[in-house]
Image 1 (cartoon, chains in turn orange, green):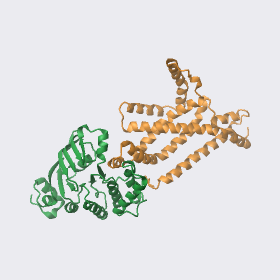
Image 2 (image 1 turned 45 degrees about the horizontal axis):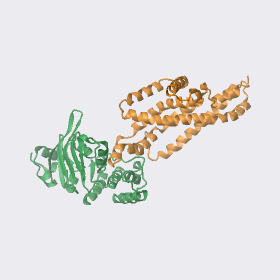
Image 3 (image 1 turned 90 degrees about the horizontal axis):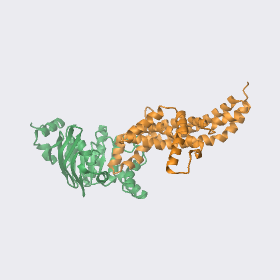
Image 4 (image 1 turned 180 degrees about the vertical axis):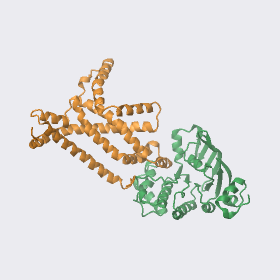
Length: 236
Length: 250
């Protein structure tokens, strides 16, 4: 077998059609994971009774098991729960009407939530306690102080780690093909299945992933530059 | 008027404030003196409810609060009656000088943006920072940051402004500019409670001095009474160490 450079190009064009699916999975899991992360991080920092041990267990279990395992557990476990509930409550809804990509959304959101929780927690801990006290001292509520004073600074502090998580989810989204979702990587496999030029197809996929990752890195750099005006951390 | 009745505070088993009674009249400048660990900062933080008193009651203006049964809402209302100037400035790091002052006006006082800007500019000019409106805290010197902190507190028009060692973190050369701002607003009749180690400031500006040690108020009175004729042995010891030139007879 010889390398067929022209097929890399052909595959590249065909793979472009799968970019929306990959981005969709990434964006959904990052956004939902971000919300989960904020809630879990706050529960852990404020040591909310009852919820605190649950949050700790969630983070340890999810970070202690592979992302692929989460997907498989959701894929095989969720239908059991949904169908059992449906029968009990008399719904007409059945698990078979959940689209495949739905399983990817749910399981990857759960995965990224655990990682985000730790990223956000570290950001929150990096904000000086005096910032919240200053907010209190001028009469703000805890919610106002957290939202307007603490969160913006925590996000700035956790930005490098957040971008790491986003990249991780982008690359992790390739696992969705195990539940028959056609993302960039799965598309490469399909494209090559007719002529067996897998290497060329996967090279094209790699180029696309690299390109997307490069965009995320640039975006992070732009935001970092904007917040650098006030946020001068570490040794720089 | 501010009235503290039987304010107590314990951290675990250690009692740091023991039945503190203190009355501050409108327009008073009260300076709290005392060795470190005497509870003076804790007392100040209790007035702003940054520390929750274990017991006692507090009256600020027309607001009355029983500390033992204070609800979140009551604490929130009480906090709006006072504003704090911190030792470490604690300016909002991600906001410019003017945004720091505007924040409370917009969010707590719910002023319109135009009005908040007008007031904030006026306050920053008053503390001598009319040319630093758009500077971030990281671009300001310690003395400038502290003056923004004072403007931020003034903006809330509280019943009382609490100063927690406002010059302790500053270079000696910058202490003067901050003290002169505090002097200026003291003359305008703004009620304030100041924890400080600046003895000359205490003597010149305060009209009431409180000496604390071991979580109790040992002695209080006018500056003349306290500095020139201290009654308690503990007060004399402290003053002798801080201002040896006065040479007290112990």
